[in-house]
Length: 258
Length: 326
Figure (spheres, each protein chain N blue to C red):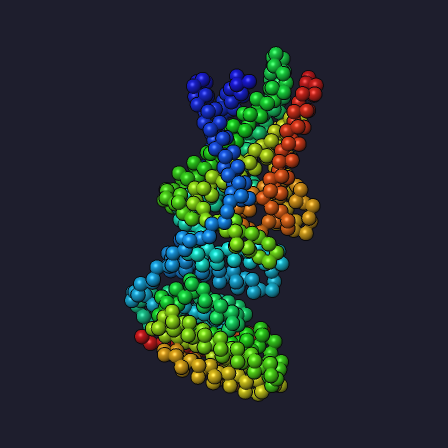
């Protein structure tokens, strides 16, 4: 064995020994002693360039947007995208921001995030479902459909909806927004008729709010589920099943033009 | 003393163990590089974009949806939440948490190999440092020299520390060189956030610091090296205590693997935090993920490891100097 090689290796090892020890010391010093330095490097995301080469779809909202109930997992959004792909030669890009159980106030907060705004800003089409969880609180039904509580819920829902649509329009004045309305999953229950009444009212009010913004289309789904609701409901009797998602998708897709 | 160390170094290098270790690391790094590359590719294909913000945003939404499921345990939920808040923080501040490049790969490789892979590599050297002298019979030759026994052992220990330093360096260099071929060699200056406080409420961001990646890496290396030294010392002790190399390795291996398993399920067994093997993931504190057991902090883990290290060293020297050799 060459003595020199041995010596070199030993020295290199010793250097690394010191280096790593220094790293350890630095880690400890920094972890405990280092001052927090407020992040200033937060450059705003560069403005998205308008590019006509592709069709960008952003879906926001609740479990319906997420695709809950659809066995293929695509949901009505996925079906709409499939439909769009047959209609256009441009590549269709989807970003699905739907969160299970999301209420209108949570969506409002979500739209306050910079990155979500940036995505909306780049979108050509925005698909939205919201309101179901405000009203039914995750499928529990409409326990007190005639009390004052409902009025409070309705009022804050409409306020949130206005804020949401305003935010979308501020971020992106051009994108078409398709706001998918509510259906009544409890049609066949004893109180179905009363619940339907509430839902029709809320749908009407949602449509009114949508109409006050340009290029926002309110898409009714109430009638789709009206006659044979159980054929189109998932086993939880709340979310639409594969067929139900398909129904919604067909309606939305037929409205999309460019 | 220097002569003794040189002698030990010569023995070590003659065994070509370091080359074997380098080869193992190279193979693994190549594997991981390919896996990582594939993952990025599928992600890009699925979302149809290269934009890291879109990808991160989608990951955040996916985690939110997982959180909304009622079927996941509270512990897991808490960990997911901390991860989620961290991702959101990165996104809000427009910082890419995994800037593509070899340094980022190196960081990820280090963070994932700190508790099992690197300790294993260290064991390859440490576990037969003394016991092989027994099995070869050369221990008698060594001890009949006019040198005090503790000096003999110390020279072996210094050799161990030096070679551990080399192994850590080799890991860094090899992972940089190999992954750089795919991801590019840039990214030393990429911003990395550290200083997140993980509390019961979730993630505290009031003392967050912005570091350059190279700074963060050097700290990571320091922590990885410390863990390697502690594990190396423990198997060094076993190598003194147990004459059979295989038995010593078995014990150490069992301890390490049990540590990896335990970390996932000890959250309700509070006193488990005094075991050395659940304290190995030091880099997680820098990164800001929820510790396996509540109340564990960087200083706590360092202290526990330090105690184990000192005890192992003391036992090793005491036994080696007192024991009859025949």
